Figure (cartoon, one colour):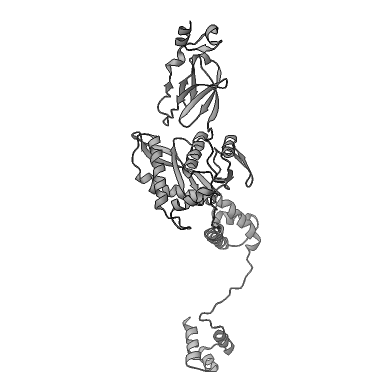
Length: 409
């Protein structure tokens, strides 16, 4: 670089003739003219492509390297082992050539992963009332005097970015249905489309491309609220990036500043109030005003809220001779007249309904025990063990409560 700088200074500043420069440097006049005409300040030498003994085996070696990358680090072959395997195939070149090829291949692969393999993305823009995004997360809170792990539902309107966070003990169908109902109540309407990942409570089987076998109960919910379910491609979280970011932001905006609560209901009331407060405190970014301002404008584009979806999960049970049914390691009493008979159990987030012959025969508050160290509980209702008596004269052959039967007779 200094040598060319001297040539340029002699020719351009000192106006020295080309012949004199050639005499001083020992370069030909044509070489000096080429440097001056191109305006280069540093010579660039091109290395000519030379044939290598490894060329016939380059494709085979590249295939081996791709295969080795899929293995664990302990199971991968070294460059020396690959060189020995190539020798068995007829390669008579040096190990250094193989090692240089491996280094170059790994460097090219690393650069590709940092650039082209990362992909390019188009920002998503949503119209008012077009869509919402849903996701689950796991977080911790102090509830009822102990620190427990919670399954947290995040629902976010894609246009206004208004959001709701609601906590549950499980990620089951009935919790999913309940989260949607509370979100639509808070949003005061239903968007036209819901964007989900391939969660098991919604998708029974992931097919090729966008083909999905959707769970029947989940499909019933979408039909009731009249919105279309759209499922992301596997491992493509950016397709619902707004709610993914909401999960991350909620950790420092909600969970890290959260007080203790006596029960889960109090926690969810606090979460709803805090989410609404954040709407007013957070600027939208893409549109003028806060999230609350844009949500007020979006409400007109939402479908009016219908009645709540009857979001239970049904299980078939047989009542034991001791008038009990078992659910989630706990046992619940059933009226004695249904002992040894099949019944239907309707599971809601906070209650259980036992249904037989098309009628609700009893109801229990649901007990969810997260710890498996303690034995299951037995929940009795003493009235279930008062044997009814049949009185055709007074009630048309219907079963009566003993007190009623005594008065009737």
